[in-house]
Length: 168
Ligand SMILES: [Zn+2]
Ligand SMILES: [Zn+2]
Image (cartoon, rainbow, N blue to C red; front, side, top):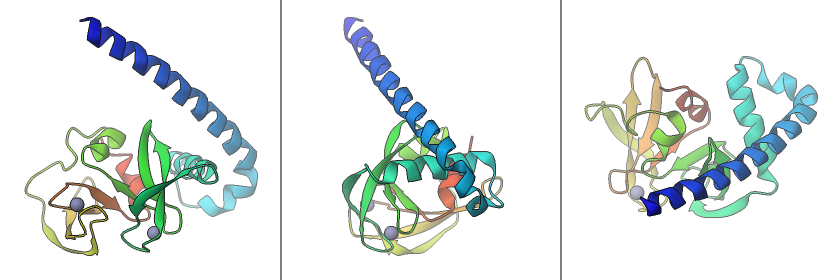
């Protein structure tokens, strides 16, 4: 019991600093919103907020050891929905370790079904260097994700992250 209580207390203070950080990001978003508006034609408000919040983090983000499966540049670490995610700001793609997809999307599992159609992906896993598999999330998801069969990490290309965050 005691252990659980102290873990919960630690998480509370961590959540608080994350909240403060989010407040700061929001302020920066407000400041940049007017000049940024035209870039977001066709995106909904949540998507815009997401992209702006990532952009607001780029300058001070730490460099990740993970290399982008597409352009091979080092990714950076950004906070999305309170977790650290490897993000490539050149291709606007991101790498999620096992379990992170369900955490940021509020899915129950990373991959909602074990029986999704798949085919060889064009990217190699940035952790295992093995060829990944492209999974087709059909309706209601309409999403393509690359997944590594070994480490179960997931690579999302440009535009897929926004859709993933709407998955429930
Ligand atoms: Zn890249
Ligand atoms: Zn892997």
